[in-house]
Length: 307
Image: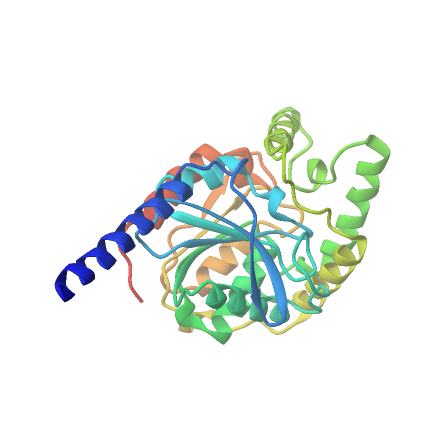
């Protein structure tokens, strides 16, 4: 009788797990529901879907980005191979609390968020400011990350990183006067190819028509820019102690985090793969060349690696 009871429990558990995996796998980023989890006194908004079975991939987003600023082409492609999780930083979008005052604060929140979901290790895909946060995360809890992809980003104290404040405000005003999203200017070159890529990218971000995230407040922009400016003036961290497999990518004409920082960043990690630089593209090179980027990302994330 006891054996029958145990077998029944195991069968039910297997069915529940299977159903959960099926539910997760059936979504696209445009339809995956937003969930919430509490950590550090903060209620974090996040979206999770994709193929389970391995540790998840966590996406660290850019300056003033909410959940709706993740490129669905990149998210869906990764979800076909791995479970992927995106989340709003403290005070951003639907996540509660007041925006973190430093990059290190944001990293501590990210660590708490990942642990609140029950994970002891994750792979990370980080873009722009997300790459700054990832580096600070490594300094606090290096074993939390297994493999790391860093795009459109650079090292702490990198050349030109602190200049992002003036550039961002300049392109925000340009966007206001031209009735365009500032990312049209900040992320893409202003030639024919760049403008087409910008329009395509911004159109993809609008594919989610229901249950969109809350808008990001102006106070968040100010706080994050201040944190980035300070981080850009700080002493570079010693990244040579981290043996993680690392993939660095960028456009060849990044104005926000100047492209030379990508080469500098890769040199600092002992197990970094050759830097991937996309031609005729800017800060959003991975979005302009998302298909080519994914040809690097998927094999990198799916091959076995331990640290």
